[in-house]
Every structure is written in structure tokens, then in C-alpha cells.
Length: 333
Image 1 (spheres, rainbow, N blue to C red):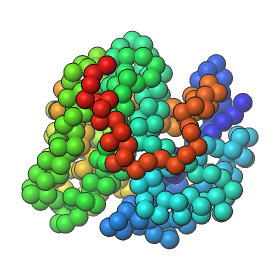
Image 2: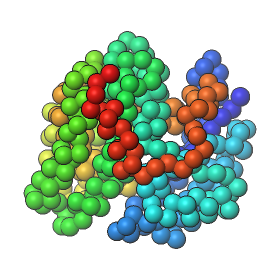
Image 3: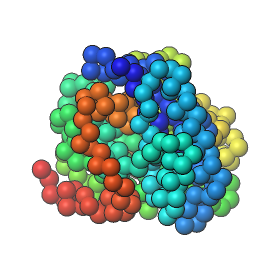
Image 4: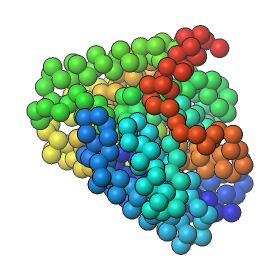
């Protein structure tokens, strides 16, 4: 059986096609299409007509490509940039009218759970109690667990693109005042979650997402061309130095650095600052970079035939998701 998933994020739409054999998604083909949705979001986080059109085109192209590769209809989902948009319903209707495909939005907590599932399968049981961080364009997902699924998972509005838009819109490079304000904001948002992680004391800390992958490369990890099985790690002290290096450079020169791509150069500083602050507050000295994330988590769920994680209802906003798990964070299990 050949299955696929389409992930509509703030920067790109990514298609992953896999053969479902032996309980694992064996990769067959991947493709991506640039979206740059964060460039077409107003002050209220509403997606403009151009952004909606690009989403429709990207989903249609991904579905056609999946069909050419012999896959079933992809599970198509959008992350925080669509989930948190005030005109979310309009976007979802436009995609269904234009493609015949239902674009889903998942609660941030569910995204964190799926990412943890993928990381656990990749890292294995030898990882022990596992903490997982995932920085996206709109949100930061944090999860911890001792078993196959997390004991708790949370989504916070600390994505790299969101924070760049809200805290670093001014001069280039960013000023010291802007960076201090951003760090204070991140520390405040992470306080309760970080306390829970420190209390749990994970044996292994893992990170997923393009943001962490690029930051690890900047800090000396092997390049992607060496394949997914080469160990990649990101040390907190090296990431701290990277924050300083990125802050000193204008956006146009950040892409000259190893690992930093031109499309993500503008948000790389915010991503590095969030990652470093999270590691410091949570007591993590090193992260293991995991190549599997939410797309693989969805493929694993499909292989398992488990549909209980998806209710078919629209997701709550990020703030509602965060509020819903506060009690879970406050009381250790």
C-alpha cells in the first residue's frame, strides 16, 4: 500500500509519499512547493487572496503528483498559519472547491503528539524518557513521554515566523532592545512548560523541524546530503553563539552561513533565540536532531489504521489549545 501526506506550512507545502510495509513508512518520493504565506498575512493574521490561491495550487499539484506515484489521496493538513487565521474557514472552503480535497487543521496539541510518536519510533526505546521540541512558523510544540505516546504535549505561539513579524519588524539587523523584548516574551511563555520538563528530567532531548535542522548545520552538524542516518546534534553553547552571529548580520547576509537557506534567513534569528531559550530553561545541554516529525507521525497513524486521533472537527485556536492543557502541565502525572 502506498500512502501520502501533504503538510501546508508557512514557508512551504511538502508532499511525502511512502510505502506502508513492516509497520513503517518507507520513503518513496518527496516534493515541496514554496508558499511564503507569512509574507501575505496582515496584522490580524488574516491570509490574503494571494496566499489562499497559492495554497489551492500547492494542494492540487501535490495531489496530482501523489496520483502519478500510485498513492492514495494524501492526508492534507495545514499548520498554525492557517489554523490561527481569522479567515480559516474561507481558506478551507477555497481549497475544497478548487481541489476536491479536504484540508484539515489539527489542534496544536495533536501536532505535538504526532511529532512525539514519530520521534519515538525513530529514536527507539533506548532513548528512555524523551523530550521533543519542534519549532514551526507559527508555534513551538513541546512533548514529553516515557512510552510510545507523550505523557503531555503542548503548543505555544512561539513560531519563528510569528515572532519575527511581531518582535523583529524594524531595523536590519535587529536592535538590542528588540532582542531583549523577544527573549523576555519567550521566557514568560515557556515558564510553566519548562518547569514541567525540568521536573520530568528527560534522558534524551530531541528536536525536529527545518528550523532546528538548519540551526544544527550552522553549528557544525553534517549536511543533509550525508543522509538521515548520520547522527546530528545541537549543543546549547553552540546555539548561543549562533544567536549572536545571526543577530550581528543583516538578513541578506544570513544565507551566507552554513545551513541557513535564503527563504528562512529572516526568521532564523527568532528561531535560534527560541531554541536556545527553551534549552536553557528546560535544562537541555544538547539536542539530537530527529529527521522524522509530524508527517511521519501521520503516516504511522495511517499504517496503524488508527483514526481516533482525528475527530473531523475544526481545531481550536492556539490560545484555546494552550488553555486546555494548563491543568495537565500544573499537576505532574
